[in-house]
Length: 467
Image 1 (tube, one colour):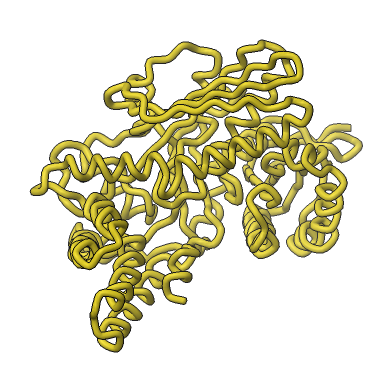
Image 2: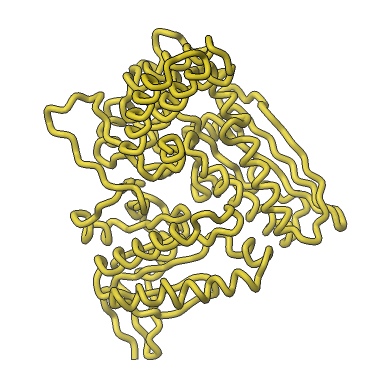
């Protein structure tokens, strides 16, 4: 007999499970079993959850309240951060979580069906690794109880769901920020989260962007439009288009999809770069696109596209990075690999791409060059920070002195730009190599390094600088 009811539904899934299992299936399964017995199942029981079913690497769980569901998800995600500490990226087990409050149908065997389940599953599919996505109905129940950064992703069209659902993303480990008082000046921006806001939602004016920033405490500021003043961060932004399956067969298609997802995950590690979600770029799959149009639609500076081709027992993967503003090719690479273990090939190429494009890579250098071409009277805090890095990399007394000056201007323009504070502290301490008094310099650098950790306690680089 069927019973219809309102329930809080949590759906979770392991990110990149096929890749993990392909690399070492026995170890992956053993780790998942251990996680379930030591962390996941006890936490579900503690918060009065009922495991409806497990689907391989995923779970469908029912809770009596959204508060219980969210608390359970936060504890599990926090526990995963601790368990992944020190592991290389390719060995980390990370979960996506979606939570919805809605109407479900409970069947005689206890299984749950209906829109309430479907929406939770789709929310899980768009969540970032380690994050929790809530529907508006679920968020309304817990909005006053959350002590972490929340990003409003706005009305989102979920796959096979008729109407758009307003989605909120919680990032575990990033604390909520107090709202500034009414008297606060617009330049007093709160620290925020590193969560990527779904691409393509461009606000019409800097004032509107500032309202959103203050509302959600976002770390990522919107790309600077003409006329926006100094202090607004305009970080590197990238869209990874679905890699084309040249061969056309199903196995190569799986590799292309997995490679696209892994590249997005690897590039998302770099805090100086915003990477558009896989869900936002999926609409371009299998289509011929105008890169400049993609840049406008997703509000990104760079677009990475590529292809996968299989020829007998060999794989050929190509990738190219394009400046979306002028359709200029900045970088390209090709890999010819044996296809006998394509999961290992997938992981290797994704890692290489992350290293080549990320921090100190192609995109970082392109950003520094763009900053040098900017008008000096209209530098943003982020451009000052990039120019400072460029000077610091000269490894000279003159370069160090100029870097210090630029970093000081950057933190003056935007006191919440943690990375500028970190490089300021490091460069100041480094000035002892060029004759500065270590006692005087060291004391000031220590104050600046402590400032970094206060602004962004979740940034490992901040703690390394302080150390």
